[in-house]
Amino acid sequence: MGRIVPIADFEDPALDVYARLTENQLVCRERPEDGLFIAESALVIERALDAGFEPVSFLAETRLLPKAEAILARCPEELPVYTAELPVLERLTGYALTRGMLCAMRRPALRHAEDLLQSTSCVAVLEDVINPTNLGAIFRSAAALGVEAVLLTDSCTDPLYRRCIRVSMGNVFFVPWAYLPDDQWQALLHENGFESVAMALREDAKVLWDPALRKIQKLAVVMGSEGPGLKASTIASCDYTVTVPMTNGVDSLNVAAASAVAFYQLALLRQHPL
Image 1 (cartoon, rainbow, N blue to C red):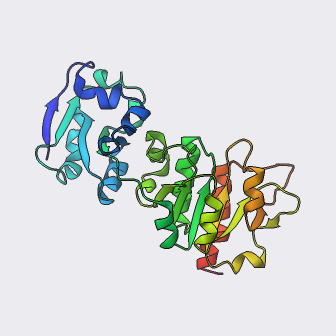
Image 2 (image 1 turned 45 degrees about the vertical axis):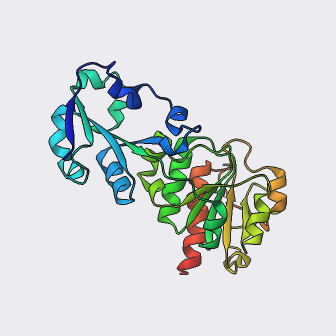
């Protein structure tokens, strides 16, 4: 059930991890083994536990604690479960969005991109996607639509950023992900037998349903940042350039929306043709 620890003072050091540490401090790059992330809401916490993540502590509104019994029953008895009344918790930025519960969890060891490429046949590659809402939505689409792993350039937002986890509905815990090693990641794809499909607004781009795309055995769907999209050098290095056809004068889709369309057409239908 965990060890219930009432909190009456917002300045209590026990709340530091929830109230005063920044996302960068939680990552703890100097000592990665000490890194943490915050999962919020009972649903997301349950999914993290299902995926094998280790809880460090919980924080819950006192009156909602009985609703958390099923989750707490899965945790060691000595695990601290901090509880507080709503006026204390309202001073935590964003607490109203948590639906009553937060959990600090240990960050997993980072995976290696090459290991994921050797064990998959359909991946998403994200270049410079920095908005956590977009990244979370992309992970949710990847989980739903047949993408087996997500690979990110160094400048992408951390998939365990609190808002990203929430928007993904915990699917960042189930879709394997890794950071790409350097600017030569296109060569890494080809060395592992992947053909790359760059999503870009180009007049010479193929449409999503082009028959040639159905023949790809190992597929990498490459998508770019929210503003400029993929770099010109990235597009040039990919095997295909593909676009989502637009109507009614709309020039493009948000990267998260475009990912759902692309994953459905290129990944899901590849596995389950109509």
